[in-house]
Image (cartoon, rainbow, N blue to C red; front, side, top):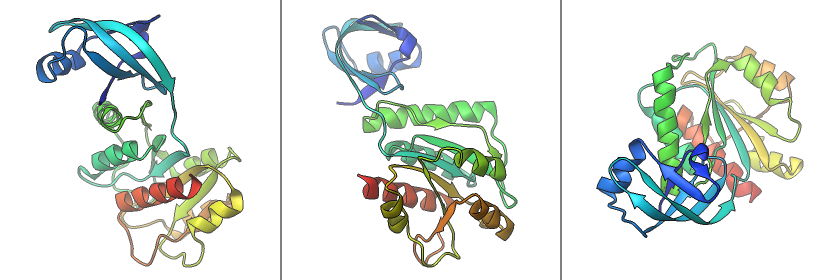
Amino acid sequence: MPHFYIKPENIKGNIFYIQEEQVHYLFNVRRFKVNDDIMLFDGKGNSYAAKIDLINKNKVSGHLLSSSYKMPSPTINLYTCIPKGDRFEWLIEKCSEINVLKIIPINTKRSIIKSISKSKIERYEKISISASSQCGRNDIMQIENPIDFKTACINATKNKNFINILPWENESSTTLKSLIIESKSKSANIFIGPEGGFENEEIEFAKFLNIDTITLGKNILRTETAAIAASILITQLTN
């Protein structure tokens, strides 16, 4: 059964209510009725089995029957340049489906898109919510505002419980599997470059901070392909 997003503040004790955009979908599209069972999630890791007590074109309300809590494992933060066109929206959707915890856009010397408008951030958040609803995820993947590459590297390496990896086309020997076996970590920060790749000075800065360059194979991958491939590999290798 698909589950539907509910703002945490719309749960009071064991009573819930839904307003705004979701109401139209539940009432007119899905045609839920009084006494129907429904699954809800609050974006904070909580999922609820619930029953509808009232539903009309303005409001849905009811009571909770049970709850459970689950957050993504492993923890994956994706530091990525923004690809052109609608490919970033596709990346957001797919990263949500494969349990990436957070996307932090980064600006490198070869980045093409370096800023995100408030309206686009809001659109990206809706895509993330929709993906969580579709795939049964209890939380919502966060999308942050862009930061510069060096700041991202410094921020990521502060937490010593994470491995920090950077897929690079000139790396031929170090694999993700070997790093995970060595570190035994279940949390990772992934750095993905722009279409033109990282500049050598950026690679050297990352290595200086002990961010490991890895190979994802012989082919040169697009930004979104590399991000998805690395995230899936981490999930498979740490579970």
